[in-house]
Picture (tube, rainbow, N blue to C red):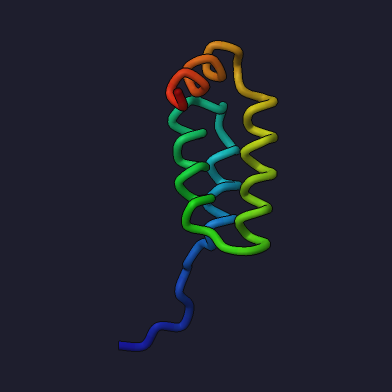
Length: 70
């Protein structure tokens, strides 16, 4: 079997892909899961994306997300 190119997305690329759609509670949960898997600079960059997602999330989504953390 000859594989010329393997299309593998990094955790950061996956996080960026999640943010191409409107932010939902599920989006925030998925971002947190990716951040937990990431290490070093990639983890920091995903953390920055989480902060951006929280700022842009609708108020009801943000309230649901915060309640889920309690």
